[in-house]
Image (cartoon, rainbow, N blue to C red):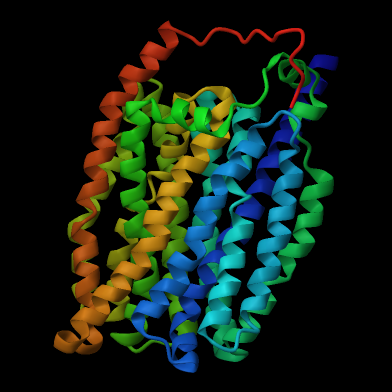
Length: 446
């Protein structure tokens, strides 16, 4: 009876942890994505070019987010670090900097505030992935990480709806302030409610004492990059992220410029589409990975590969549609298909690397996904739109999105190739497990 009660308490604690981490990730993406729906009124107010919009929404955030992600991940991998407290500090910082975006009076000030958001958000996902991977058994990890990844579509949905509604009613400046400040309060909940099992669970504490010091950064990165499947996963995830961030930013602008919608209308309708479609795709991707990956682990990544290939012609038809309701309806299907990859990608990454490098693995994926995807996707598409404007005028964004849809075949190919390699590497890892670490008597903890 005591064991059953303990197990019940443990499950309740796990559920609470997952729900709080999901909420944090929702706030993460609200604060990250709200700038997309506000980009057009900001550009009109501050007289920005499409290239400057791409820089503000992408590279300014992503450069610091990615660079700081790896050292923060190394800190999260240290046995003495409280991962919930690390997440709480990061949440308070990025929330405050989001509010400060509303006070910007020119492009440079807004750019600096967005950099601050990126600095804070660098401390969220690597420790969260590491924490989830410690709490959840491997056979359930894809579903758990997919659940956490629901923060992406939910946060995108809320960021667009709330941001667009506030922009129409209060203006873009107050929208930033209203959205940013609640995260500071949530950071207190994270600090005082979440517990790190390395400090509270007896078995986890015992395992922590038996572990050697955290790997040096260079060695941890080498451990991660030694896996060929992981490298293929980097290519796949980076290409998918490049297209996802680029298309999200410029699709919101496409509906405003080409179809004449207001930020509030785009936030509501495109936000619902991206949010509901993203949630369905993210959940379904994790479910399919766990179900078919249990039979053959190469199929952990089959759904993302097939889904992204099927999404290409439907997305082209959506951007060509003569009316915005038809365009939105058509975009729902590729939104679902393109969201399959979140849970399977991070689950595969966590299974390919040593335990002490799990946060580094997540941070390395995030480094490439966000530097290439978030950093360069919106910027590249913005530069391309500026280049096409002399020929196509306001319709230049439509032609940029045609190209983005076709490029969806690139991540589809790399997910397929990685699936073939994944099965081989995981089988080899099962046959040759890493030896238990031996600690010299003189070695201290770090």
